[in-house]
Image (cartoon, rainbow over all chains, first blue to last red; front, side, top):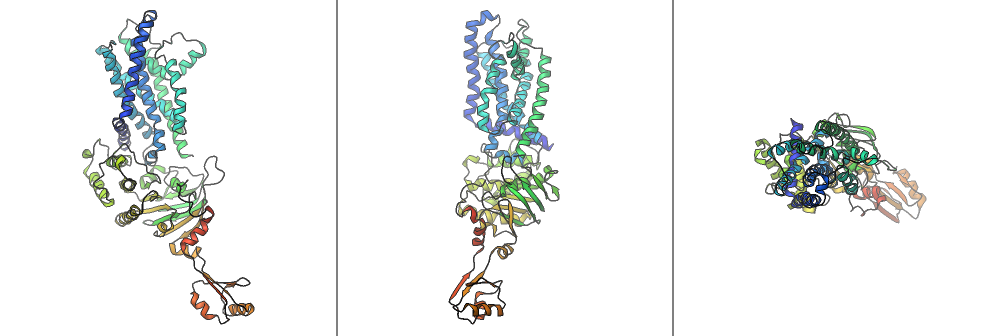
Length: 259
Length: 317
């Protein structure tokens, strides 16, 4: 009970932080909208006919998954920030389990990512992405899985980072390539050789593909967009989640104590 | 309450031990001060005792619990006020305290103050009043001054009723009035709850108010005991005397069984005698009399003088 309460407190703290940080709120909502609005529409008008399926929808599902996943991951990495302004001392000297600290953080940042997901969906409706009630229903659990998975990825990255500067420096290397390897804007069905391997290693790929499972599964007219079956994606995400959280927490705690 | 036995810590890639085999013990209800210059190993010691840093060697127990094997139980029994403020600046004062209370299992979490148990609310009110921030407790931390932040940290650190309260240079960055009122509050809290207080400081006048002091320098214990013990241990009181007729003086000092050394001038240890009594006893006409009666401050500076007195304005390592 104590641990559950502590996890809730950790999560609520993140939500409060988001609501009181106006700049971050605006930035969090503006970027995905620009991606979908500009990239989605221009890609569709330029290459939509060649691709054989609606590129606006394709980009929409991709950006929805990427935004949630990345937002949760970066949120967890922000524990580094706590360390730098000394608040993490307060958390780490408390008697709750280190796993509760990390799980609370993952839950909190997933919670923080949710309003972004809702905003993106509303925007999708406005610019004419087809979203039936059935699709919306399928998106809800998918969004939750994707954010939790993103948070877990944040844990493993966090465990290897010495400070915030390293976090800022490593970001272009761990996030940007995944944009393309996971196929947010670009179909990746026909990658070959090393690129195919790199794509399969990129965890974001499975988050994006699961999102497309949810969307296109309900729209069976375009069946060849998702790469894997939903069960395959879910299984991979499940395994990676456990591995990331378990190993990430252990490494993080060790690094904190053995300076 | 606290037993520290030959504790050693060497940081990764460090050339020497930050803490180099220190031992001391703290009794229940005691006000204990760890005194030393910057970089002496005070913060390292506190971090190990509060289980946030793993020791390289040696052992320590708090309330009979091993700080490594029973870390979680130790954490429940200790409170700490860190050297640098560790409040979440996005939250209000009360939210910081509430967060802490939940992490320490004092009460279950509720998303607003009104939904928290009455016992918790009463305790927050009482503690906030004791340190004088009752009016500001619901304000955002951003609006707090340095002194108010410290006071809030005291409220926070006491909410789970710790048996031992560690304060790591609690007065650094505070002006004199805030400093003084902080002491008053600590005394009041100690009087009410019989909490054991362990304080680190590099100011002698702060340490002198403690029941016992442990002076450390370069990771080792230099002196350890009550302020009076420390004074007896560190302060050398003597009088230098000389005479034109040195052999006569030497002979007389020997006859009087006064502990003298040197070839002239002679250094006579006072060892509890007064200068007056020593001089009165000597009949040989003296041409040099120099008394040496340093204060504890002088003695302390003598020990830590290697690190240049006056250079301790920067933050501790």
